Amino acid sequence: MGTEDEQPEADGLDPGDLEHHLLGARRTLTRVQVADKAGVPLELAEELWGQLGFPHTDDDDVAFTRHDVKALKRTAELVSLGILEPDSQAALVRTWGRSFARLAEWQVSLLAGIALSDDEPEQRLDELLGSVLPNVGKLQDYVWRRHLVSAAQRLLPQADGATQSRQAVCFTDIVGYTSQSKNLTESELVDLVERFEDEVTRRVVDVGGRVIKTIGDEVLFVTDEPRATVDVALSLTERGEDGDDDFPRVRAGVAFGDVTSRLGDVFGPTVNIASRLTSIARPGAVLVDRGAFDALTGHDEPPDTAPDGTPLARLIDRAADELAELSPYAERGDLKFRRLRRQSVKGYRHLEPWLVRRRQWQEGDRPE
Image (spheres, helix red, strand yellow):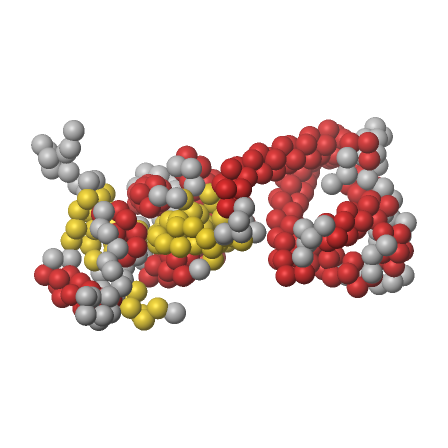
């Protein structure tokens, strides 16, 4: 993004000169010239542009400005400082490209809709480009810096390189999204998804969690505490089951355990299990794995082996299956759990799901 002194004057802006205004300069350079002026090998420049999602250009295409030279020089400096190391460069640059591409799509759609609804769309577009976009740029920088502070507080204590921690992971998705998308207009579908994403984000932020990513009709988020995660999931499903609420029906899966964080994303078996639980959950249901169940009910992790060296996992699983037939229910505070039959899903032959609901208190037995 260019600095303020790089922005062209907005007065008298010709709407037909949109590219010049947005890029901050006219296209006067080819990709070969940009790489040469920046002192960067053309192969590296092409690789970076491709990872950012920029369209391919031929050697003779005049598709770049002087600002592309500056950007490429800064990128080369990051490489020389070791910030963009070969093993992380591709993933980091792709993350930038995808994030800003999605943001740009939304912003252009928003501005275009406002301009086209005006009696004088060209004049309105002139006003928007001259006043709104500079403010949006400053606001984006502000939001980014605030998130930097939050990430620094969370990650800098792990400056020894550790990227793994115990977290509660939740996937939640809209029930019947595919079938609904066939019967809704584009505008109605956008409203549905935005209403869903906005509500999930608000509730996750309220409990100190982080939304990792949204994937169409699905949201992935994490918190440090399983109880906070389950509370969010239950509140979402309860809204979806309320016939007087226009919030969509949802389902959710929660797992608790070791999670690896990298470039703002999360990985590992705990994430995979949360995803699998969501895929088998019924509409309006919240399923948790054994790790989350133990954390929520105060059960300690069992030792790996019995005193004689026999692995306990198999014995515990067998005993749990037998007990579940007799008493599959458990309660803890205001939560009630029901152990479901083990499931065979991709990557996990004996996934142990627990259905969690809020306990329906009888009069007189609610704790003070």
